[in-house]
Length: 176
Image (cartoon, rainbow, N blue to C red; front, side, top):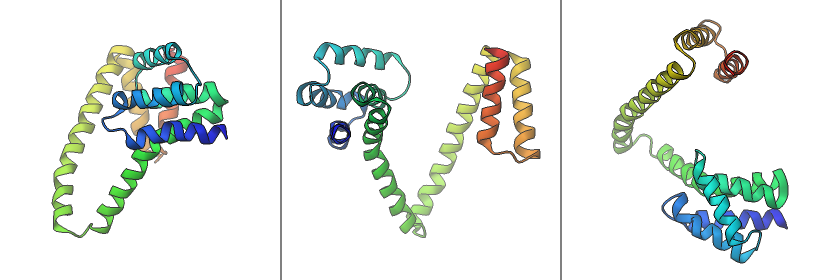
């Protein structure tokens, strides 16, 4: 029963809310504080402050925290899933629509315009990661990790997840 309540407490605000995390916070507060009474207003304000101080979307952080406080790890998983489910459903619906009309000239033109934008966003991400890597780990470690990753990916055809895990292990052991 508690999992159903957690699911509804986070699914409903995310399905009816428009405008992202900050816009749905009052709806989540109404569910968590007023409707179910899992927290008082002061506790909710503290969770909101903590959530704003950490990176990533505010609604998912709050869902994870409230879900964990109410029903442990299972509650956190249910609350986070309920928070992302509306976006997931919309994305799957949009992808299904695009796939159904993939031969349409309009969809092909749209794809032609979207690809370069995505490529530029990815290039910007690479530049940001490179500059952060150089600032944090230094030139030598950044070049070692980049070279090892390139060799693992292109020569040994290693799975990217293994390459990321290896880089994290290297950073944790030698840079931590």
